[in-house]
Image (cartoon, rainbow, N blue to C red):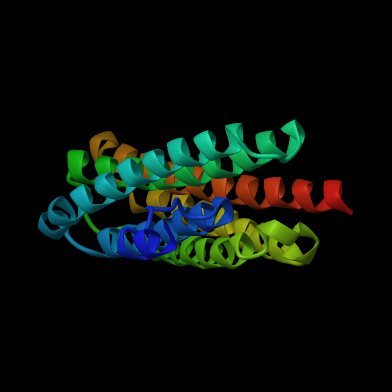
Length: 210
């Protein structure tokens, strides 16, 4: 039997916490795609946008796999609920970035204010911190400064979005030109808020385990 098992190894599912890391790595990829799309013109945005859609689809599938694993895990219902919310919020953040991409493509919006590009970089940084946090989910007491770091990025992001909105208002122009820019700015803020929520859920896990 051992000989046969070596010849025909069984396919094994990735460990539960490994799925969270896989989802967080996808979040980083989506944040990178998101920043690239924001920085390009209309034609390149149309080319890049389907990549974000694919990433959002994969994120939803990973959430489904995580939910199935949590349903059969030995952790407490409270922990399972928080971990599922953690996964869902990551997928929602990818979906929010796809929503921003859709807005830009559908409205053929031109160049974005510099503060929005800087806010997108903050989204990338928060996503990278999330990957590092998923490495520690099996021992949440080690999560340390994750929430504090992401909260700092959120405050910076909020300030950048406010600056961008002020810049948009000072430009002047028709409602048809200004409204899409306002929508994009608010969509970016939605992503920032979701990333802060993600870190808050992780911190709840840490506090509960203390």
